[in-house]
Every structure is written in structure tokens, then in C-alpha cells.
Length: 162
Image (spheres, one colour):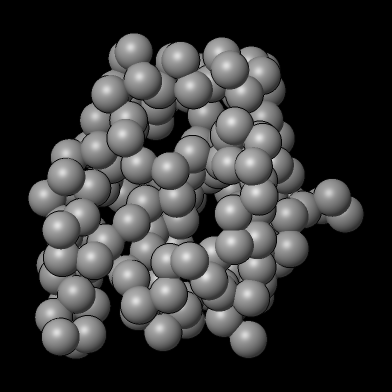
């Protein structure tokens, strides 16, 4: 099983098979518009622009499970991301990442890249998962890790696929 076995709804409501990203390096991140880490949208957009032409995609998944910091609907979230951070990477509908209602993709990500002391639970907004071109989770990054600090890991995976 890989991330390509899953589908999710884009922020416009259309279903997106993650198999459409086959062969790309992915960074999958749970996002929020009213979080102390929200300015990471700027860094995410910067690395997206830097590496996109080399086969890199970022998939953003809004989540309201941490301090209710993503209260908006899909339209409000999309407008916020576009107007404030010029986000051009794919954004998806708001999901749960923990608990019984956790999206199946996030169940997979967490089980394949546990956090500290083996914990699978997502601790906060802007937890990031790096996925190689074969659809396998390579690394999990805590919320505090800035997108720019992941550049070497992303470059390594991009070069591995050439």
C-alpha cells in the first residue's frame, strides 16, 4: 500500500485520486488559517515554487482539530490562502487527522511515520509528511520545522528519482 491508494476531495469538492501524483515527491501537511504556524504557508509556497518543476507537489489538508484554528468553510479557506499567501499548491477539503473520523490517508501516514516515542497522533497544525516518488512515507516533521529546513531532504528524493 502507498499514498497512491487513497483519494481525497479537493477544496472545490471534486474527488482527487492521489494516484494522479504517482512519480512525484510529495509533502502532505495539515493546515490551519488561525494558528501560530500559519505563516508557514509562505515557506510552503516558496519551496513549492522552487521544486515544482522537478516533480514536487505539496498537498494541503485543512484541519480544525487543534484549538479550532480552521473554522472556515472551503471557500473561506481557499480565499484566505490565496489572498494572504498566494498559495498555488493543491488544497483539499477540511478533514480530521486524529480520532475515529480521521481521513484514511492520515491513518496511513501516521502508521508509516510515527512521531516521538512511536506516537501516531498528530500533535498540532502543520505536521508534515514527506513521501518519495514511489508513494512511501519517508519522514515526518513536527509543526515547528520550517519548510525551508526540509530542502535537503526534498532535493535528495528528487535526485533519487532521476
